[in-house]
Image (cartoon, rainbow, N blue to C red; front, side, top):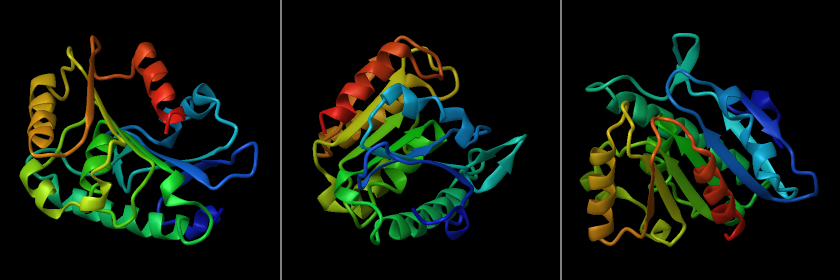
Length: 209
């Protein structure tokens, strides 16, 4: 694993228990940090998975964010996407295999999973977007790497989400699906959070990859 100083974002790296080139990159939501999802690797309990939890590049009230609040998101999305591309290029140069790796994002991290992950030149084993939205679905379809349009996309959202409305996100996903983007979408009776039954489903989905 490249040392922390070799990556342009602060991070937590948790190595696999057995030698492996599998990697799961975890992107937190606004105001959170890499520590906010430190519970996920032990929950998933996958001995052959390495984990990289990244801090977003912008400070935000004691935590970090990937981009500014609406309507000023675009500059931050573009910058964060470029930084993630640099990080992924480093990670997949020799240490890890893109085709065995997973990108997981919550809230703002979910948006980056789509906005960055769908455009990135390498195809991953899986993309998981939890409780997020898409900045510009129409433009995403134009600019996406067509090779990532596999069955390896999972998107979940809470029907009681009071931060990012369910109807907005579900309509965006339905639009992408109608245009041929192969995404599995699942709803849960939750707010802007991660639910236990949702985590169980995500764990099974990852292990099925």
